[in-house]
Image (cartoon, rainbow, N blue to C red; front, side, top):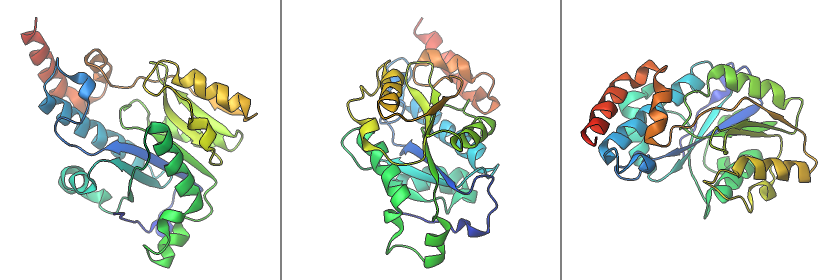
Amino acid sequence: MAVFIDSSNKHYAYPQYRLLVFAKSPILGAAKTRMQPLLPKEFSLALHCQLLKTVLTQWSEPAICPIDCWIDGDEATFIEKIIKVDMPNLKTLPLFQQRGCDLGERLSCAIATTFADNSHSNTTANKAVQAHKNIQGVFVVGTDCPSLSAEYLKIACSMLAHYDAVIGPAEDGGYVLLGLKAPNAELFKGIEWGGSSVLEQTLSKLRDFNLSYFELPALADIDHPEDLVKLQKHHAFNDLLAQAAELIGRHR
């Protein structure tokens, strides 16, 4: 299932780009699993939902570029628990199902599909198709980095005009953002996903293909209980942080 937005009448700062948000459906026991077992699955789900709402709000409200959301899991659950409950203003956010055996294949598929516009054929009105034409660059991001601000994204968009790729490193050795001017499936093959060498392996591949790239400042993902302290500057997480402190205190 895909839900489409006619963005032809919305003024974006960078309408030639697409932001592909990779998000897990909010399912109990399947979200933020690396917070467990120190923190219960109910807390992990609540944290996941708040991260989703936070990043989607800060990337959509400034109208930087059109957003497509690529879902891992049940789309109906995503719509019910995220869009309808908390973000009705995004009820026409384009949703697509992630496809592939690993993260690399899923990223490659989403990027290639977006550049090709194949996902829009025979499923939407002609004016919606036109709204997604002339794509000159694609950015992929996850939902675990609320420090990836609108300003950070604007810098990434501005730099992609001058480079073949833009990459935002993660402090754990991965990356929180990757921007490309063209699809390249080979960039995502042979990467040790989830490890500490993802960034270096990706940069090595960019150099192997003689692709110029701009490296943004490193940011922190929120994956483990010790990462929660990095949310203190984001007021939307105050209640969850207090809850986490109480839960962790019980284990001491």
